[in-house]
Length: 163
Image 1: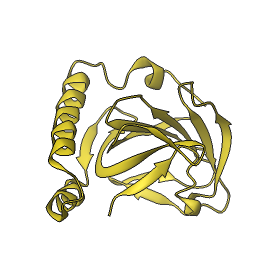
Image 2: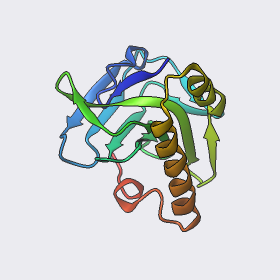
Image 3: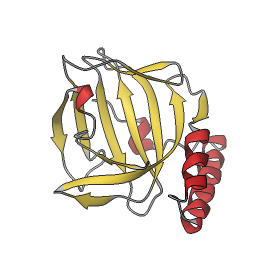
Image 4: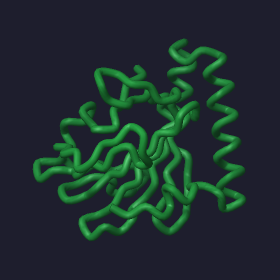
C-alpha cells in the first residue's frame, strides 16, 4: 500500500519528530530532530534514525524523488535516503509526497544501492502504480544512476548542507 510522507515526519510518530525549521520555499524545506523517544530505524544495514539524529528533507518541484539527508548525533552525514515518489504537493498545510516504495540509499562514504525493489514490483503487480507512473519511475532511476556516475548527484544544495 502506498503511503504519504510529510516533510515534518508526522507520518512517522515512532521517530518522535521535532521540527527545527520549515520553509516550503527553501532547500531543505524542513530540518527535523529525531526525538528522545524515537525507535531505532535501520535500512540497508545502516542506522537511519535514533534519538539525537537530524533529518534534512529536500523535495524538488516536478521531480519524482525526495531526499532525506540523515545526520548522526555529532552532525556527521550518515546517508542520503532517496525516496522514489510522485512529485511534491501540499497536503494539510505541509509539503508531502506519495512514496512509491523504491529507494536509493547513498551512504556517507559514497557507496550506493537500490532498496525495496520487491516492494515496488508488488505495488506494480497490485495495480497501485499506473503505467504512466512506472515510466516516470524508470526514467528517474536511469537519471539518478547517470547523475551519480557523473558525480552530479546528490546536487550541491544537498551535498553541502549541514544541520
